[in-house]
Image 1 (cartoon, rainbow, N blue to C red):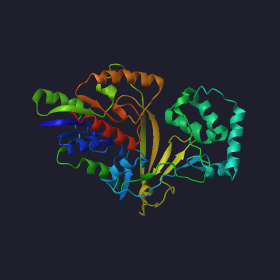
Image 2 (image 1 turned 30 degrees about the horizontal axis):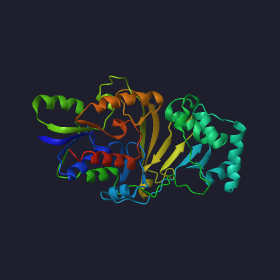
Image 3 (image 1 turned 90 degrees about the vertical axis):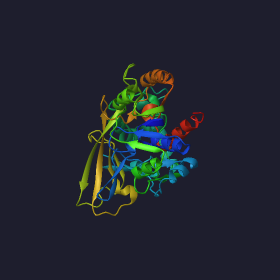
Image 4 (image 1 turned 90 degrees about the horizontal axis):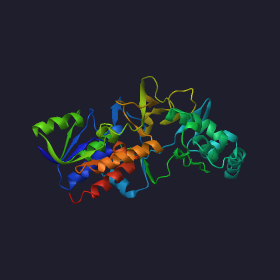
Length: 374
Protein backbone atom coordinates (compact mmCIF):
# COMPACT_ATOMS: atom_id res chain seq x y z
CA UNK A 1 0.00 0.00 0.00
CA UNK A 2 1.20 3.50 -0.83
CA UNK A 3 0.16 6.57 1.14
CA UNK A 4 0.76 10.26 0.63
CA UNK A 5 1.25 10.74 4.38
CA UNK A 6 2.23 8.48 7.24
CA UNK A 7 1.05 10.15 10.43
CA UNK A 8 2.71 8.93 13.59
CA UNK A 9 0.39 9.51 16.55
CA UNK A 10 -3.42 9.56 16.66
CA UNK A 11 -3.70 12.53 19.01
CA UNK A 12 -5.42 15.80 18.19
CA UNK A 13 -2.62 17.24 16.04
CA UNK A 14 -2.24 14.08 13.96
CA UNK A 15 -6.00 13.63 13.59
CA UNK A 16 -6.62 17.19 12.36
CA UNK A 17 -3.69 17.00 9.95
CA UNK A 18 -4.92 13.66 8.57
CA UNK A 19 -8.47 14.93 8.14
CA UNK A 20 -7.40 18.06 6.32
CA UNK A 21 -5.03 16.24 4.00
CA UNK A 22 -7.67 13.58 3.28
CA UNK A 23 -10.16 16.28 2.35
CA UNK A 24 -7.54 17.51 -0.12
CA UNK A 25 -7.44 14.09 -1.78
CA UNK A 26 -4.38 12.72 0.01
CA UNK A 27 -4.34 9.15 1.28
CA UNK A 28 -3.22 8.97 4.94
CA UNK A 29 -2.14 6.17 7.22
CA UNK A 30 -2.34 7.03 10.92
CA UNK A 31 -0.40 4.75 13.26
CA UNK A 32 -0.56 4.79 17.05
CA UNK A 33 1.72 2.81 19.37
CA UNK A 34 -0.95 2.35 22.08
CA UNK A 35 -4.39 0.76 21.86
CA UNK A 36 -6.55 3.85 21.41
CA UNK A 37 -6.83 7.09 19.48
CA UNK A 38 -7.07 10.66 20.89
CA UNK A 39 -3.74 10.78 22.74
CA UNK A 40 -3.88 12.57 26.09
CA UNK A 41 -7.44 13.82 25.53
CA UNK A 42 -8.68 10.22 25.44
CA UNK A 43 -11.91 9.66 27.36
CA UNK A 44 -13.35 6.27 28.19
CA UNK A 45 -16.91 5.54 29.28
CA UNK A 46 -16.99 3.74 32.63
CA UNK A 47 -20.23 3.15 34.55
CA UNK A 48 -21.94 5.69 32.28
CA UNK A 49 -19.32 8.39 33.00
CA UNK A 50 -16.81 9.71 30.47
CA UNK A 51 -13.49 9.49 32.32
CA UNK A 52 -10.62 11.77 31.27
CA UNK A 53 -7.95 9.07 31.47
CA UNK A 54 -4.98 11.43 31.18
CA UNK A 55 -6.16 14.34 33.30
CA UNK A 56 -8.81 17.01 32.97
CA UNK A 57 -9.23 18.65 29.57
CA UNK A 58 -11.56 21.62 29.03
CA UNK A 59 -11.82 23.00 25.52
CA UNK A 60 -11.63 26.79 25.44
CA UNK A 61 -10.79 29.32 22.76
CA UNK A 62 -11.42 32.86 21.61
CA UNK A 63 -10.77 31.89 18.00
CA UNK A 64 -14.18 31.52 16.33
CA UNK A 65 -12.62 29.73 13.36
CA UNK A 66 -11.31 27.00 15.67
CA UNK A 67 -14.59 26.85 17.63
CA UNK A 68 -16.53 26.41 14.39
CA UNK A 69 -14.03 23.75 13.31
CA UNK A 70 -14.47 21.51 16.37
CA UNK A 71 -18.23 21.96 16.23
CA UNK A 72 -18.18 20.27 12.83
CA UNK A 73 -17.26 17.05 14.61
CA UNK A 74 -18.98 17.29 18.00
CA UNK A 75 -21.68 19.12 19.88
CA UNK A 76 -20.32 20.86 22.96
CA UNK A 77 -22.03 21.38 26.29
CA UNK A 78 -21.88 24.63 28.29
CA UNK A 79 -19.41 23.50 30.97
CA UNK A 80 -17.51 26.40 32.57
CA UNK A 81 -14.25 25.60 34.34
CA UNK A 82 -14.44 26.91 37.92
CA UNK A 83 -11.89 24.99 40.00
CA UNK A 84 -11.39 25.46 43.71
CA UNK A 85 -8.23 25.12 45.79
CA UNK A 86 -7.87 23.61 49.23
CA UNK A 87 -5.02 24.70 51.50
CA UNK A 88 -5.06 22.83 54.81
CA UNK A 89 -8.66 23.37 56.02
CA UNK A 90 -9.35 26.44 53.87
CA UNK A 91 -11.13 26.47 50.48
CA UNK A 92 -10.53 29.20 47.87
CA UNK A 93 -11.97 29.97 44.45
CA UNK A 94 -9.75 30.01 41.38
CA UNK A 95 -8.62 31.98 39.48
CA UNK A 96 -7.63 34.58 42.08
CA UNK A 97 -10.69 36.84 42.24
CA UNK A 98 -12.83 38.77 44.70
CA UNK A 99 -14.28 35.54 46.11
CA UNK A 100 -10.70 34.42 46.83
CA UNK A 101 -9.74 37.73 48.42
CA UNK A 102 -12.91 37.91 50.52
CA UNK A 103 -12.21 34.45 51.94
CA UNK A 104 -8.54 35.25 52.55
CA UNK A 105 -8.80 38.76 54.06
CA UNK A 106 -12.49 39.56 54.51
CA UNK A 107 -12.32 42.40 51.96
CA UNK A 108 -15.44 43.17 49.94
CA UNK A 109 -14.41 45.74 47.31
CA UNK A 110 -11.81 45.71 44.55
CA UNK A 111 -10.17 48.78 46.10
CA UNK A 112 -9.68 46.97 49.42
CA UNK A 113 -8.23 43.90 47.67
CA UNK A 114 -5.83 45.95 45.53
CA UNK A 115 -4.65 47.86 48.58
CA UNK A 116 -3.97 44.63 50.50
CA UNK A 117 -1.99 43.10 47.66
CA UNK A 118 0.01 46.26 47.02
CA UNK A 119 0.84 46.62 50.71
CA UNK A 120 2.33 43.14 50.75
CA UNK A 121 4.26 43.68 47.52
CA UNK A 122 5.68 46.97 48.82
CA UNK A 123 6.85 45.36 52.08
CA UNK A 124 8.81 42.73 50.13
CA UNK A 125 10.66 45.36 48.05
CA UNK A 126 11.56 42.96 45.23
CA UNK A 127 12.77 45.04 42.27
CA UNK A 128 14.57 42.43 40.19
CA UNK A 129 13.10 38.92 40.68
CA UNK A 130 15.82 36.27 40.44
CA UNK A 131 13.68 33.15 40.69
CA UNK A 132 10.08 31.97 40.54
CA UNK A 133 9.46 32.67 44.20
CA UNK A 134 10.53 36.29 43.95
CA UNK A 135 8.63 36.73 40.70
CA UNK A 136 5.39 35.39 42.20
CA UNK A 137 5.78 37.42 45.41
CA UNK A 138 6.29 40.57 43.36
CA UNK A 139 3.02 39.89 41.50
CA UNK A 140 0.57 38.77 44.21
CA UNK A 141 2.19 39.32 47.61
CA UNK A 142 2.94 36.87 50.40
CA UNK A 143 -0.48 35.50 51.41
CA UNK A 144 -1.62 34.31 47.98
CA UNK A 145 1.85 33.03 47.21
CA UNK A 146 2.13 31.03 50.43
CA UNK A 147 -1.30 29.41 50.30
CA UNK A 148 -2.04 29.02 46.59
CA UNK A 149 1.22 29.15 44.62
CA UNK A 150 4.34 28.00 46.46
CA UNK A 151 3.71 24.41 47.52
CA UNK A 152 1.46 23.60 44.56
CA UNK A 153 4.15 24.79 42.14
CA UNK A 154 6.84 22.83 43.98
CA UNK A 155 4.74 19.67 43.66
CA UNK A 156 4.23 20.29 39.95
CA UNK A 157 7.90 20.87 39.15
CA UNK A 158 9.53 18.65 41.75
CA UNK A 159 11.84 21.37 43.04
CA UNK A 160 11.85 24.41 45.30
CA UNK A 161 10.45 27.66 43.88
CA UNK A 162 13.79 29.36 44.59
CA UNK A 163 15.41 26.88 42.18
CA UNK A 164 12.96 27.63 39.36
CA UNK A 165 13.55 30.48 36.89
CA UNK A 166 11.48 33.64 37.21
CA UNK A 167 10.23 33.52 33.61
CA UNK A 168 8.07 30.44 34.29
CA UNK A 169 5.55 32.79 35.91
CA UNK A 170 5.40 35.83 33.65
CA UNK A 171 2.11 36.84 35.21
CA UNK A 172 -0.49 35.49 37.60
CA UNK A 173 -4.13 36.16 36.69
CA UNK A 174 -5.67 38.40 39.34
CA UNK A 175 -9.27 39.49 38.79
CA UNK A 176 -10.99 42.11 40.86
CA UNK A 177 -14.47 40.77 40.07
CA UNK A 178 -16.62 38.06 41.66
CA UNK A 179 -16.08 35.70 38.73
CA UNK A 180 -14.96 32.07 39.12
CA UNK A 181 -14.71 31.35 35.37
CA UNK A 182 -11.10 30.18 35.02
CA UNK A 183 -10.80 31.08 31.34
CA UNK A 184 -11.42 34.43 29.69
CA UNK A 185 -12.12 32.82 26.33
CA UNK A 186 -15.36 33.46 24.48
CA UNK A 187 -16.04 29.76 23.82
CA UNK A 188 -15.78 26.91 26.30
CA UNK A 189 -17.21 23.45 26.84
CA UNK A 190 -16.81 19.67 26.77
CA UNK A 191 -17.78 17.60 23.71
CA UNK A 192 -20.94 15.59 24.37
CA UNK A 193 -19.99 11.94 24.23
CA UNK A 194 -16.38 12.65 25.23
CA UNK A 195 -13.19 13.64 23.47
CA UNK A 196 -12.59 10.19 22.00
CA UNK A 197 -15.81 10.54 19.98
CA UNK A 198 -14.63 13.95 18.77
CA UNK A 199 -11.36 12.50 17.47
CA UNK A 200 -13.17 9.48 16.00
CA UNK A 201 -15.32 11.85 13.97
CA UNK A 202 -12.30 13.85 12.81
CA UNK A 203 -10.61 10.64 11.61
CA UNK A 204 -13.77 9.29 9.96
CA UNK A 205 -12.83 9.67 6.29
CA UNK A 206 -12.48 7.19 3.42
CA UNK A 207 -8.89 8.28 2.76
CA UNK A 208 -7.74 7.75 6.37
CA UNK A 209 -6.62 4.34 7.62
CA UNK A 210 -5.84 3.82 11.31
CA UNK A 211 -3.60 1.15 12.81
CA UNK A 212 -3.36 0.89 16.60
CA UNK A 213 -0.69 -0.95 18.62
CA UNK A 214 1.75 -0.01 15.88
CA UNK A 215 5.10 1.42 16.91
CA UNK A 216 6.80 3.58 14.30
CA UNK A 217 10.33 2.61 15.26
CA UNK A 218 9.49 -1.07 14.86
CA UNK A 219 7.40 -1.05 11.70
CA UNK A 220 9.56 1.36 9.73
CA UNK A 221 12.34 -1.23 9.65
CA UNK A 222 9.93 -3.95 8.54
CA UNK A 223 8.37 -1.77 5.86
CA UNK A 224 11.78 -0.70 4.58
CA UNK A 225 12.74 -4.33 4.03
CA UNK A 226 9.42 -5.53 2.57
CA UNK A 227 7.96 -2.44 0.87
CA UNK A 228 4.63 -3.51 2.42
CA UNK A 229 3.89 0.15 3.16
CA UNK A 230 5.35 3.14 1.34
CA UNK A 231 4.68 6.83 1.76
CA UNK A 232 5.78 10.19 0.44
CA UNK A 233 6.00 12.12 3.72
CA UNK A 234 5.83 11.51 7.47
CA UNK A 235 4.24 13.63 10.19
CA UNK A 236 5.88 12.65 13.49
CA UNK A 237 4.08 13.78 16.64
CA UNK A 238 6.19 11.90 19.17
CA UNK A 239 9.23 13.18 21.07
CA UNK A 240 11.65 14.87 18.70
CA UNK A 241 14.68 13.75 20.73
CA UNK A 242 13.48 10.13 20.59
CA UNK A 243 13.13 10.39 16.81
CA UNK A 244 16.84 11.23 16.64
CA UNK A 245 17.67 8.48 19.16
CA UNK A 246 18.63 11.13 21.75
CA UNK A 247 21.88 11.72 19.88
CA UNK A 248 22.21 15.27 21.23
CA UNK A 249 20.94 14.34 24.71
CA UNK A 250 17.56 14.03 26.40
CA UNK A 251 15.08 16.87 26.59
CA UNK A 252 13.34 17.13 29.96
CA UNK A 253 9.66 16.44 30.51
CA UNK A 254 7.32 16.24 33.48
CA UNK A 255 5.15 13.18 33.80
CA UNK A 256 1.95 12.35 35.68
CA UNK A 257 0.51 9.38 37.52
CA UNK A 258 -3.19 8.78 38.03
CA UNK A 259 -5.08 6.94 40.75
CA UNK A 260 -8.65 6.27 39.73
CA UNK A 261 -11.38 5.21 42.15
CA UNK A 262 -14.98 4.14 41.50
CA UNK A 263 -17.27 5.09 44.38
CA UNK A 264 -20.38 2.98 44.03
CA UNK A 265 -22.00 4.31 47.19
CA UNK A 266 -21.39 8.03 46.53
CA UNK A 267 -23.17 10.15 43.96
CA UNK A 268 -21.20 13.38 44.56
CA UNK A 269 -17.73 13.24 46.08
CA UNK A 270 -16.55 16.86 46.00
CA UNK A 271 -19.22 18.95 44.29
CA UNK A 272 -16.86 20.17 41.57
CA UNK A 273 -15.04 18.72 38.57
CA UNK A 274 -11.59 19.95 39.67
CA UNK A 275 -10.30 20.57 43.19
CA UNK A 276 -6.65 21.55 43.61
CA UNK A 277 -4.70 20.65 46.75
CA UNK A 278 -2.04 23.29 47.21
CA UNK A 279 -0.19 22.12 50.33
CA UNK A 280 2.88 19.97 49.88
CA UNK A 281 1.90 17.48 52.60
CA UNK A 282 -0.76 16.10 50.21
CA UNK A 283 1.16 14.34 47.40
CA UNK A 284 -1.41 14.79 44.62
CA UNK A 285 -2.06 18.15 42.99
CA UNK A 286 -5.75 17.72 42.32
CA UNK A 287 -8.76 15.43 42.39
CA UNK A 288 -10.94 15.22 39.30
CA UNK A 289 -14.57 14.12 39.58
CA UNK A 290 -15.42 13.30 35.99
CA UNK A 291 -19.24 13.29 36.06
CA UNK A 292 -19.32 17.04 36.74
CA UNK A 293 -17.81 17.80 33.32
CA UNK A 294 -21.10 16.68 31.81
CA UNK A 295 -23.47 17.49 34.69
CA UNK A 296 -23.95 13.78 35.38
CA UNK A 297 -26.75 12.53 37.59
CA UNK A 298 -25.49 8.97 38.05
CA UNK A 299 -25.98 7.26 41.41
CA UNK A 300 -22.21 6.60 41.67
CA UNK A 301 -19.11 8.61 40.80
CA UNK A 302 -15.51 8.23 39.62
CA UNK A 303 -12.62 10.31 40.93
CA UNK A 304 -8.98 10.53 39.87
CA UNK A 305 -6.10 11.73 42.00
CA UNK A 306 -3.36 13.29 39.89
CA UNK A 307 0.27 13.03 40.97
CA UNK A 308 3.17 14.88 39.31
CA UNK A 309 6.16 12.66 38.52
CA UNK A 310 9.73 12.99 37.35
CA UNK A 311 10.04 11.76 33.78
CA UNK A 312 12.61 9.19 32.78
CA UNK A 313 13.09 7.46 29.47
CA UNK A 314 10.25 5.02 28.90
CA UNK A 315 7.72 7.03 30.93
CA UNK A 316 4.83 8.92 29.36
CA UNK A 317 5.87 12.56 28.75
CA UNK A 318 3.21 15.18 29.48
CA UNK A 319 4.81 18.61 29.74
CA UNK A 320 7.99 19.95 28.14
CA UNK A 321 10.23 21.75 30.60
CA UNK A 322 10.82 24.95 28.64
CA UNK A 323 13.79 26.44 30.47
CA UNK A 324 16.89 27.93 28.88
CA UNK A 325 18.82 24.66 28.90
CA UNK A 326 16.09 22.62 27.21
CA UNK A 327 15.12 25.32 24.73
CA UNK A 328 18.77 25.52 23.63
CA UNK A 329 18.88 21.76 23.15
CA UNK A 330 15.56 21.77 21.29
CA UNK A 331 16.92 24.43 18.90
CA UNK A 332 19.68 21.97 17.99
CA UNK A 333 17.16 19.19 17.40
CA UNK A 334 15.07 21.58 15.33
CA UNK A 335 18.12 22.21 13.15
CA UNK A 336 18.49 18.46 12.65
CA UNK A 337 14.80 18.25 11.82
CA UNK A 338 15.13 20.92 9.15
CA UNK A 339 17.47 18.59 7.27
CA UNK A 340 14.83 15.85 7.06
CA UNK A 341 13.17 16.52 3.71
CA UNK A 342 10.32 14.03 4.07
CA UNK A 343 9.65 14.41 7.81
CA UNK A 344 7.38 16.93 9.56
CA UNK A 345 7.35 17.37 13.35
CA UNK A 346 4.15 18.48 15.07
CA UNK A 347 2.34 18.66 18.37
CA UNK A 348 3.46 19.20 21.94
CA UNK A 349 6.23 16.59 21.78
CA UNK A 350 7.33 17.07 18.20
CA UNK A 351 7.62 20.84 18.64
CA UNK A 352 8.58 20.71 22.37
CA UNK A 353 6.00 23.28 23.29
CA UNK A 354 3.02 23.42 25.63
CA UNK A 355 -0.19 23.75 23.60
CA UNK A 356 -3.79 24.23 24.67
CA UNK A 357 -6.14 22.19 22.50
CA UNK A 358 -7.25 25.10 20.34
CA UNK A 359 -3.63 25.99 19.67
CA UNK A 360 -2.91 22.37 18.71
CA UNK A 361 -5.64 22.55 16.08
CA UNK A 362 -4.47 25.95 14.86
CA UNK A 363 -0.88 24.72 14.53
CA UNK A 364 -2.03 21.64 12.61
CA UNK A 365 -4.08 23.76 10.21
CA UNK A 366 -1.09 26.04 9.62
CA UNK A 367 1.08 23.02 8.83
CA UNK A 368 -1.57 21.78 6.40
CA UNK A 369 -1.58 25.15 4.62
CA UNK A 370 2.19 24.88 4.21
CA UNK A 371 1.72 21.56 2.35
CA UNK A 372 -0.30 23.03 -0.50
CA UNK A 373 2.47 22.49 -2.99
CA UNK A 374 2.84 18.80 -2.13
